Image 1: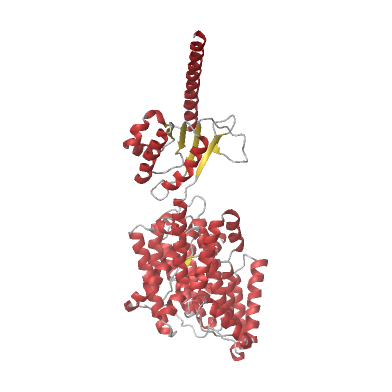
Image 2: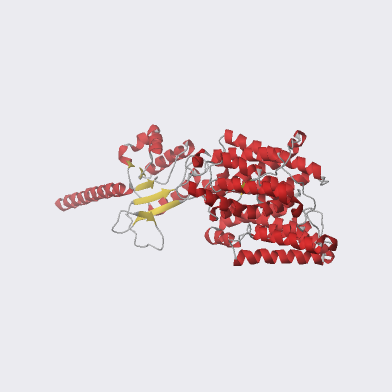
Length: 568
């Protein structure tokens, strides 16, 4: 807060007011809809659009970030609440939701104390893309029955899909008409007037039609009574912690991941970069205090942050304006909100959940990296087949396995010199003209060399040595960040093996830390200064000078033998 409050300019106030109200027109209907995803009353969504926003405005480091809740967090919350309150008792759900939010907040704050802000980087972008696509599909299937006026027991994605098909003949035509109309309005506005607050328009029309035509009497389910007034203190149930903590851990991870991603994506030029550990504190306290006042677990969302930024938000004053609009809704508009058809909320959820499914992005991953595409599919399948909370675990495991796989399979390139330059690059069929030097084999490994990948490097380099039979193997270490002891020991053994074949090992372009480690080892003593070279051009120059000396020596020896033979 001190970052933007100290330098606040009068001209920003109008921009922040407009942005805050514009964002409220999108956030408030969506927050209510997301509460229904979690199986909670719609007023919980309003509480979540109030308390966390105020806390974040005071403590957060991102100026445009809008912190309420998201589709991902809502479905994760709903999954966890269904496990601990299978009966669906409203009072028990509210208590469990408050406990979950407080627990998420505590975990985020604890992560900040332990300086774990870097953890968000452990989930790769392809895995996150697959995970969100799975979440989007699960949410859409969860909301379709509300569009049709059906009620089915939630037992898992595939079983729910079959159950939906079985109950289709029971569809309420009146509810379906409302749902289709709402979808058409939302999609039409998004296409024809993308800057307009489509959710607000849909909700307003839904309420107006419901009141004028008394849709409830025609079998269309409505939201019903919404308590008017500010949220009351809601104490967590400590007995639920044992059941809730695994789910809270997953929600905390996704909350922070989404928040920091949105904060970084919409940081403006000249604005401070988001500080990960301070973001943990801000979102953690937002969840903790929000849970004490009835809010569900929340975090920063990409869609509402995009609206906030595009509407001109300059600071978190815009977030405070959005929070004030949520309070006004609770105090003044609650009776009207109760007339809203459930199909309207379902339409809002479906339209904004479709955005989680990005076929073009998944296809782009396939075109660039087939392996990462498989990781995205694994995360997608984890969510759809195992459920959202287990899907998070699958996403994390896939990310860590992918990281370990990449670290254990470093690349090794054979180098050539671009003609007429001092540029050395991997040899490819695209550049057959690149220069090589008989007797000199130049290779470049990449990444950190350690016990898990040192053997892999050896498996790649020895066939090259057998084929080229070089006098000198020059290893360019410019792309090697570190050498672990086991890898260094294998390098020592490799140098001895090369020496036995009458060849030499030269190490080139070592960074200061790696150079110091090599010099402290027996390898450094063996190589000496002569075979620890600054760069590849110097290595080539030295090799060519030595090669000339070798050729002169061999020529002298041949001439000497010829002279001796002639004299004889």
